Image: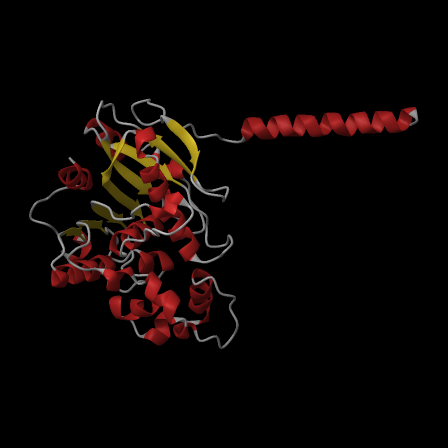
Length: 319
């Protein structure tokens, strides 16, 4: 190799190394430290095969196994991260009450096997993984609550209202663990992922609510490739699995819901996704089934006489 080529190679190598150094310095790394300055006891614990199958966990100090709360972040099944919970006051409050706390990541709907069922099943598996390793984390596997916001709220309700998804014959011992929980919380939630029920829930004509763009989003949520003329309503098995509203019965865990979005006609996807009428429909179904619930949707006049917040509600069920 002549001197000119050696000089050129050295120059580009030097340039590349400097670029990588600057990039790494500018890339913000969020440390798993809560508001009290306490670092998670376990960081980026792996519960599955996908790169986003990770969780962090803070362990309450106790000689005996402790209750656990699992937080599931939102982001429309396409964004978000477990680190968003690090600065949560609720995280600190749970620890002060002797309740351990985990915050989890899950694959997005754009990842194989595609659709939000993959996301939901990741969160389910994380619950089962922690149960399977309860001794390692000093967790009382009979006292676990799950909550989240937006997509994490819907995921929490799906876990809570599904029948026990333990697969007792599965060679994967983790999947033999129960998915039943002691309580569930949902902040800025949806009432169901049967999106064809949303026009009725939000008091909107279906032809206005479900246009071509909405159909594309529904197809993506179902894990399907959108084609013009596709009959999404014919995918009844997927719809049934995603309809956690229909799954509610009196034997399900007590439910806490808080939707603080304004009422009225929803004009944006965010308003449709977090409308207080979702909370009302969940409350109405819970009341009909005899399920204990605390529901707040203050912008449409729904409150609770107990005036209890989520942390105290969970504490009353876990301690």
